[in-house]
Amino acid sequence: MIRLPASLERRLQELFPKVRERERFVADVLNDALAEQKVDDDVQAVGGTLHLFTDGGSRGNPGQAAIGCLLEDPVEGKILREHAERIGITTNNVAEYRALIEGLKIARRYHPNRLICHLDSELIVKQLNGQYRVKMPALQEYVDEISELVQEIPTVEFTYIPRADNYRADALVNRALDTHPSPSYERPR
Image 1 (cartoon, rainbow, N blue to C red):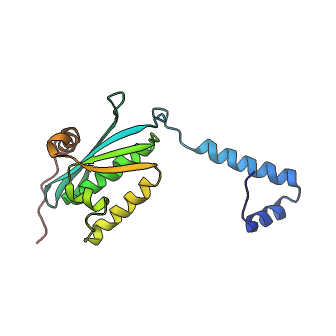
Image 2 (tube, rainbow, N blue to C red; image 1 turned 135 degrees about the horizontal axis):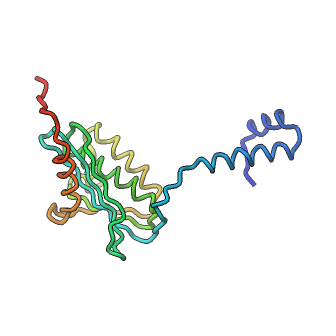
Image 3 (cartoon, one colour; image 1 turned 30 degrees about the horizontal axis):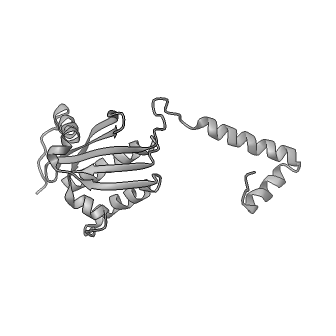
């Protein structure tokens, strides 16, 4: 049985004096709300351990930037999802954080029990693992968003890997930047 806040219960009693009517109304509202939930048919619950490889980069710092992420099931050796997109003009660090955020959003749809996030930014891994503090307030909002996203996954690890080992995510970033070349950008003076 669902317990409603007292104020809501009182309001429902005013609208529907009969218990049966009130229960029917609540059931109908819940059924409608659940029916409206978007179901992504191509995403299935995987569980287990998944690996997320992310990268972000900009051409210029700041400059035209893109993100890339790749979610892999290590047991089957299968790529579950790839994502690459341009994110406008920003710094390398912002691009790295945004790539991880996008990757976490994708990963949570697969309901892993454990997610190992591989990044080639040692700075960001150390910031997320609490070894370095985040000095720039502009980056703190990304750290906060990541903290919220990881709450939905039982175990999340952030590990540093050399750039050469992160070549697939790096290739996604470069492909996004190369496929959609930006108009020339001149920095404000």
